[in-house]
Every structure is written in structure tokens, then in C-alpha cells.
Amino acid sequence: MEITTAMQSKVLIHALPYIQKYANKTVVIKYGGNAMTDAQLKNDVMNDLVLLTLVGIKVVLVHGGGPEITDLLTRMGKESRFVGGLRYTDAETAEVAQMVLAGKINKSLVSLLQQHKGKAIGLCGIDGNMFQVKKHIAQEDLGFVGDVVSVNTHPIEMALENGYIPVISTVGADEAGNIYNINADTAAAQIAAALGSENLIVMTDIKGLLRDKNDDSTLIPFVQVSEVPYLIRQGIISGGMIPKVECCVEAVRRGVKKAVIIDGRIPHSILVEIFSDEGIGTMFQ
Image (cartoon, rainbow, N blue to C red; front, side):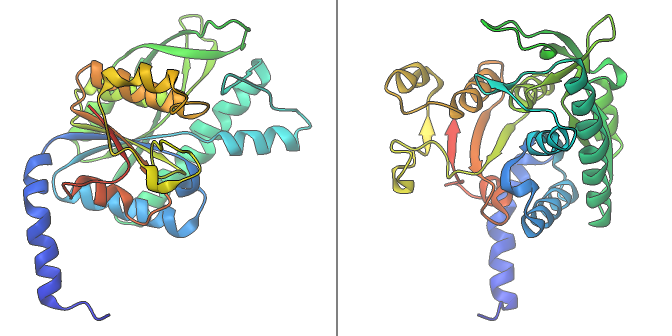
């Protein structure tokens, strides 16, 4: 179908109220899943982020990179082990996480954004003492897995004020200089809350929260944070969805206007979420 000038005009007019709503507001996007590995989807995401900045929206990109950490560890002959969805991280694994996240992935995303005519700067939780980190406490010792105690937003705000997209990898250090691997979902929630963001968008490889995980037609489009404990007891929120949902709940409870889990496999899913009433995926408020 040929796209006419009239059709293009209608799209722009439809987007106008959303552009006005988000103008000069901050949106934190947790980037992960297939949208990080599929070349076309990755290009779509970079284009979306550059477009958002050009219409006056302040974009913060927080990324993971678990599969690439696993791949490098495997090539080193080191087995990956997960406990409750979190990677067991000994000192060597923490060094690998720092190399992969703050080095390879972070800088490749910065480069890709710049190839799409955006302005980007790579940061990690160590830069500017952005993350105050403590060891994550669980029933089983996970080694150098950290929790973000607080976020120093100054390095992020300096980047935003100068027109850059901060691209943040989630490694941090404690006061003694020990390096910690930090779950990217929970770090994104902490960053969104500290910045007073308008929106937290969590990209995944599923349609959103489903009543039946095997049936996409059972998508739950809207969830009140007060409903989450009940949905967990019912088994509707389970497995790997629990930390993603909990990060959305944490963000909303700490002042983020809304948090959304979206399907990053859909081209331009970020634009669909921001520039439409119906949005995409599951919204938490």
C-alpha cells in the first residue's frame, strides 16, 4: 500500500497530543530480549529513540546483556548458574560482566545510536558514583550480585541537559571498590524513580502479562499495583515475570507515573506505546 501525504499528515496529527504530553519529560527504557539481538529490531529501536529525543522527550536507555555474558563465560569454559533468576557471580564472573556490559554492549549501542544521527553517551553505575551498591542478600549466597541502594542522578541529568541519550549498563561498585553485577530490570526501576520519570518501559519477548501464558489473547492490558500480590498467589505472575513486574511496582510506588511491559518483538513498539491511548503490552499504575 502506497503511503500518501494525507496519511502521513494524519499520523503526525494523531501523535501531536502525545508529543505535547511528553515534551521535556523523562522516559526510562529497559532494553533487552530479542530487540537487542535481531538486527532489524535493533535498528528500529535506535530510530525510535532518536525520534523521541528530536520531539523533546528525554530518553534514558538501560540495558542488560545476560546472553552475551553467558556466551563469553562458555567460551572461557566457565558454566553459568542461576538462582531465582539471578546469575551466581563470583569475582571472575563479575569482571566478565563488567567487560561485556560496560564495554562491548554499552559502547556498541552508543555507536549504533550515533550511526542513526543521535547523540549518545555510555555510562555505568560506577561512573560518577551513580549507583550506591550493597551485596544482594538471598537464601543462597549469589556472590557479587548487588542491589542499588540509591542513585546519584547528576551524571544522567548532565547528559540529558546537553542533549545526549544516556546509555546505562548495570554494573556498580561498593565503597571498597568491589564490582557487582546488578539486575537490569531492578536498576531501571531505581533510575526511573530517582529521575521522577513520566514512564518506565520494560521491553521483553512476550506480549505482556497473560492470564494464560500459552495464549496471547489473554493479555491483561492494565494492572493496579495493589492487585499484584493476588496475581502472584494465583500463579498468573510467575517465574521470570515476577522480577519484571516487581520492578514496575517499585517504580510506580516511588512516583513514576506508569510502568509498562511491552513486546519488543513488535517493530517500533516504543512509539506505539508512547503515541497512542491503547498502548501496547501491560501497564501498571
